[in-house]
Image (cartoon, rainbow, N blue to C red; front, top):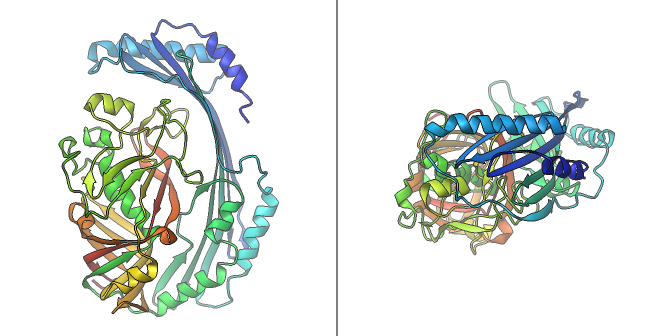
Length: 480
C-alpha cells in the first residue's frame, strides 16, 4: 500500500516550476472481472493502469497535463507542458483563479477491511461455479451467469502548499442473472442488476446475498414468463431500493450537477431543468424528500475524506423537506457560480481532470416499515430492479422499466406482473412522494459506470435509499 508514496514525494519536491500553484495526482488501478456462464468459466478479464496528472495555476490560469512516465524527467516534462498550456490559454481565460483557496490537508483514507486478504482468483471462480451449478435444471431456463468484479485503486495527491492526501480503496461487485424463455416470451431476473457494489472485502459478497441465491432468482424468472402484463393507468407506485437508486441518479443527481446547470454538458449529455436561481426557492419534492451528499458511509462506493481537488468532504443536505438547498458542485463550480456546493470534484482516472460528479447521493430514511408502506396502498404496483431507462436532455421527462412487479390491492401484495414500467416528469414526480421507508428498508447500493464529460469519464457512484411510495403515477405494461 502506497509503495510509491515516498518516491513521489521526493520527486514532487524536486520539481521546478514558475507557477504559483501546482499539484500532482497519482492513480494506480488494478481490476479483475470473473464470470461463469451456464456452468462454464469464462476467461478472467484482468487490467492494470498507472499514471499521474500534473496541474498548474499560472497567473490565475489553470491547466494540466498527464503522463505515464513517473520518473523525475517524466513528471517535470508534464509539469512544463501544463505551464505551456496555461500560457497559451491566458489570452482566452474567462476566470482569474489566483485567489481561489488550495488544499493543505494531510490525510489517509482506506476502504473497510482493506487489510484483510481477498480470496485468490481460483477460489473466487470456484464460488461462482458453485452458484452457477445451483441454478435448477429446467429447460425454460436458457441462460444464466454469476459474476464478480474486483477493483483496487490507490491515489496520492500532492501540492506545493503542503497537501498530502492518500486513498487506498477496494471495490467489489457481485452479480447473478437468470433468463427464462417459454417459446414466446423471455424474462430476465437478476440480483440487483449491476447495482450492487460496495467498498470492502469478502463481506460484500455476503451483504448482497449472492451465496444461495440461485434458486430464488431462477424461480422469479420463471414466475415472470408465466405472469400477466402490468396493467395500464395511474396507480400508486412502491419503488424498492434497487430501483430507487436509478430514480435518484437520473432525476436528482444529474439535474443537480452544477457544471451541467452552468452549461458545460449541453453538447454532450444535455442540460438541466434546474436553474441556478432555484436553490433556496424551488420545492423539488414533497416535505418527505430529504436528499444528502454523504461521503461518510464506509462501505458506499463514493465514500472518501477529500475529493480529487483536495477539498474535505462532509455530509450535506441537497434537498431538505422537499426544498432545494445546494447543488452538486465542486470548488471550481462554486467559484464560478458564487454559491456553496460539496466536495464532489472527481476524476475517473489519472488521465482525466476532475469535474463535478455525483458521489454518494442518498435519500434519508423515513419512519414506515415495508409492511406499513404496502398497507397504505389501496391500488398500486411494487417495482424492483431497473432494466431500462430513458430521460430527456433536461433530465425532466422520463420513462423507466423494471424487472419485477407485484400488484398491491387493499394494502396487500398480490400477483406477480411482468414488464412493469412507469413514466412521469421529475419536477412533478418527487412532489408525489407520499411515504418513505424506515431504516429496515434502507439499502446501500451503487453503480460502477456513470458516464459524463468530454472526453468521457466513467466513474463509480454510490446511492442508498429506503423503499418509497409515489401517488398516482402513470404505470404501463409491455403491451402499452
